[in-house]
Length: 553
Image (tube, rainbow, N blue to C red; front, side, top):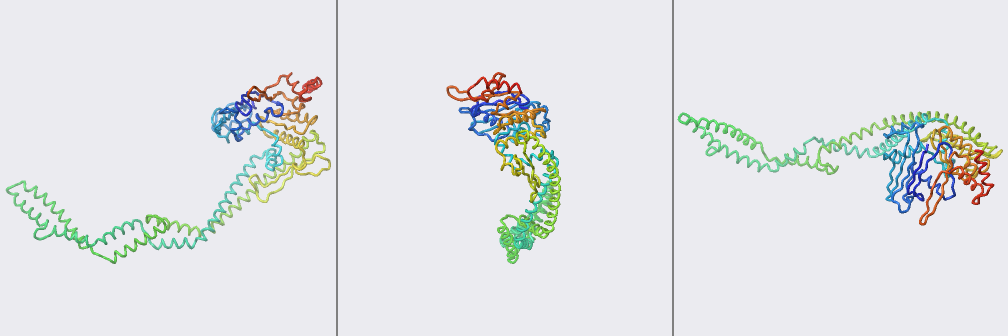
């Protein structure tokens, strides 16, 4: 239930702070006094788009805040799911800045606007005049059936099956496109794979080949250098090894007379053995190095093949070429097995489609049962509203293909006249009839959905007199059972029925105009309703009539 509303710097409202009562309340005021501004502010708490133009002139920020008593409406799961602190009093606040920035809060915690919208729709329903147009839309009519059918679980099961089916259909379409694309490219893919496969690439071979070609290219220089080193080691007359051997023998001969020579001789002998090994390896390598033009040509040819493949495929390494080869092989294997995969997915889609149709059939049965209930309730509600010959029917059809909300088409048919042909409600109902039908629909829905607060913005358009009183009866009935109903009205018959009566009015000062709202006292209500009966001139007869209306109610 809406406990209070605070508005600051919004349109013509400088500051407004008003409390609301439970049950049935009414709001009156002259056209242009600011009733729509208040509704616009509430709309911002329900997630509607913010417009910086709505911020009061010369203000940098506007604030809209509403407090709700939610202790009786089982909303704790919403707060737990969204990790919000739950309290029996819930505060929704929206702040708009002249810079264009907008912020939303739930119980003083910053919240995404979508989250505020989701919560707001469970707290308050604002029915404005343009919503009468919803009566003509299939989506609204289908939603009415679902609310009366209490088919949440059935609808959720259907939508889950529908989502799985559409996902499988999407996968099937993608696979068919891929197969068509791959098959058109199969010759190209096979040629690329074959060229890479026949290259017999191995990891590390590029580096090995590059080293080998470098050596073969400089073979003569390498051989000459090794030969020169070999001669320095092994020359018979003045070779390094010959000199070292002679030195070793000399030191060994001194050992008898000079003991220190033994250690030097041993160290020199170790060096001689290591250098002799190096010399032998140099000699061996010198013999093995040879200039081989044929092998050089062969290695260069292999490298040229690798370089050309890398350039062609825009890669830098043999490993990348091998990865491409494997990818082409995988694609070829996929093409070969695609028909089998396609058939498997087709069968899966057919099974899911059958499941969707079964779920849709269950949903249709629940809706058809609800449709009969809608027809009965609407006739019962509309007859007392000045339509003694009314007929109301719910026509259901079947879609060619199931949609997100089932396979049903729905149309509300209406006739207010005896022997009149049932036609789509938008074609035959007048403005006053539409208002009465919509009120009846809202009352019927209110009986099925536990919505705390309902606001009607001039739902009484096009009616008067006794019909208005009966519409007030319906709103009073809706306000029972822990529900709050607020009606913005121009009709005294409805205004006199409110448990609380609020008036919206404008007040001018030297520089600006401000909109205000206040709760009327009993005597002020008499005057307000008298004005609604007689106009600007307040007569004693109008005052007496107003007192009579209030006394009756």
